[in-house]
Figure: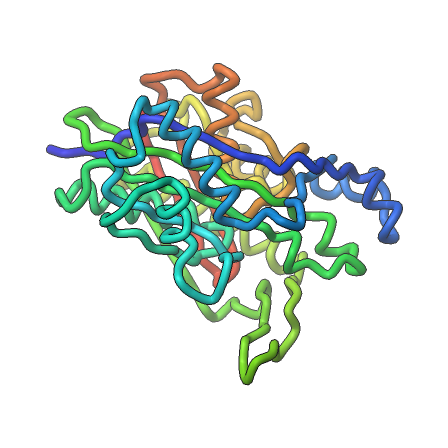
Length: 319
């Protein structure tokens, strides 16, 4: 049986670190207000000349280096993003060009903060079916460009960044089980309603969110999908070595860990320094856990994410 196994990970964060105190200089907020509600202390913001593809390509290069591979070894590229470089072509094809790869399939996947979970599950299916042998899967965002910097209820929550993994075909277990869900009935809770039309932008071009509604839905569905993927895999929560969750809000993460009976000491946390980087969140946290030496080969991980749509999912894997 063929499995998709993680061969290497990489990440990239813009140089500009913006603390809560920095934000308090431009919007009516404070470090105490932000950190007590979310666990966020700072975030990174892309430079004016940095695009999503730049962040994605940098993270991809580092993942390839960690895997000991060259760009030409990749035969599938998937970029999960809600903030693409342009309307088209896909950011994945732009990353493909920047990495010097040609010919292989390359496409974007849009599931907002659940994007990386959707993308790695899609790449897993390609590899298991024999349609690909080595896939580069990237989550990358420049959410700072769709934020209303006068709205303290949203602008304090997000940051920019990119994370990447290289998956390779293996006879040994890698991705064990995935579960994906979506429900468009909740689209009003979180969206950016703008559209390009007639040479301009129609509708609000900023992120719009019902914070309490998102919180309640996320806590409920992340717990449920974690239970679901573990049950289908016949794997008990107590055997997990690490949870690598979407880094949106520390309270949501704590609720999921509590539901599973998992100590927070077994949860990879980067939300304090990264804030919510949407599709980049999970791969950024994964790379941080691996490069810090916390996550080591042979361990079992549960990855999970939820985002606008609503779309959500979880992946059980052996690293």
